[in-house]
Amino acid sequence: MAQNQRRTIPAAPGTPLTRSIPCFTNATVSTSKSIGYVPRMRILVLGAGFGGLELSTRLSEEFGEELDVDLIDQGEGFVFGFSKLDVMFGRVLPSSVLHPYHALVKPGLRFVQTAITSIDPATKRVETKSGVFEGDILVVALGADLDPAATPGLVEAGHEFYTVSGAFALREVLSRFEGGNVIVGVTSTPFKCPPAPSETALLMHDFLTERGVRHDSRISLVMPFGIPIPPSPERRKRCSWPLPPVASIGARSASCAVSTPTGRSSCSTTGPRWPSTCSWASRSTRLPS
Figure (spheres, rainbow, N blue to C red):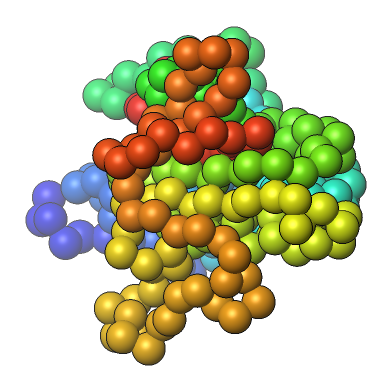
């Protein structure tokens, strides 16, 4: 078939078909009465993050029951990245930021909560802990796993806030924090959401100020950028640091590695070693396991 042909999506029995979807393969399916009923196209979407949710929702809104879309993810719900910081600093409860997937009720769309164990892209066959799924189109939107063990000492003495579980666990840690040396560090590049470490340092300033222990604390931001908040190139020249309200936050352009030679965490950079009472880091990433 020609590369730019469009695949016609078969409708449910008795339903006239008036639309088509851009072709994901080179095949063409006809709904001509001469060949009789053709089953609805099956689409497997692996991963219910931004990409998987957006695609599944748009397919449902455009085609409804004309498609069978299975959205598969092992999580119970979706959490926006910025909401993790609100929970971490005690501004909201974890339950208030979780958008459960079971509430995703749309025509032609089914959510399956299970763990994926293997993927065969050639046959479009997916094995999960809940059984086997097969589709006409396979979309993999699993993202990347974060790997704390890739940074020596991070698991033993540091904390991370890039996962939902990590950020939510820090809520309890911060509720007991009475001030001291805080390091917010980036352990490797590339990393997602470049503004997040800078935002966390600013929120930490507000958090300690509200608790009346800011004057007893030191906040250090360590990341491999010339400026702490990397804006677009066009705005870079107009961005200045430090911001007046948080001039006491120290910023250093380097990568951070956490180590614990004496049981106490510290941040080792290309320069001096910085002692830390509370050390956080954005983690290295790896392909989903």
